[in-house]
Each structure stands twice: as structure tokens, then as C-alpha cells.
View 1 (cartoon, rainbow, N blue to C red):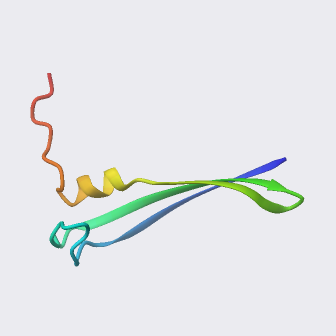
View 2 (cartoon, helix red, strand yellow):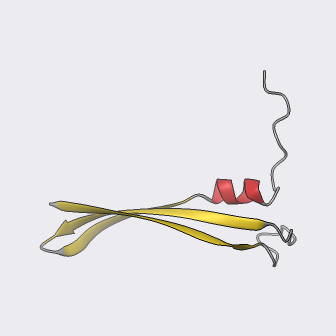
View 3 (cartoon, rainbow, N blue to C red):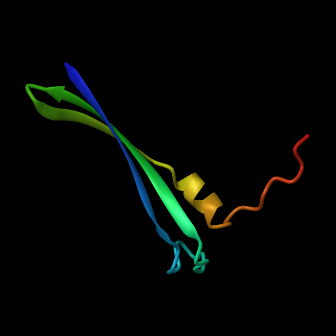
Length: 69
């Protein structure tokens, strides 16, 4: 079994509402990772992740943690 990994960074500007969050005009990025298992030269299994938590932090959807004990 062979394996392959892919990392992609999508970048842009938050210009439209997203899940009820109004546009912020901030530059944003969304990081994706995919891990593939190959059998006979073809993808047999894919695991895909997206860093939406990082995206929402970058548009200010969560308050900053000011209490850093």
C-alpha cells in the first residue's frame, strides 16, 4: 500500500456573509489536508480535514482569550 499527502492553502477576502457572520473584509486563509491510501495506483481511501476553526478566528468570529493565566 502506498500513501500520498496533500496540503492546500486557500486565500481570499471575507466579502459575503458566512453562517450568519457578516462580511469583515479581512484577508483570510483556509488550510486543507488530504491523506490518501493508494491500491493498484488508485485512491482507495481518503481522509480530508479543513481548518475552519482557524478561519473563524481570522475573521474575528471568536473573542480573543485575554485571560492567559
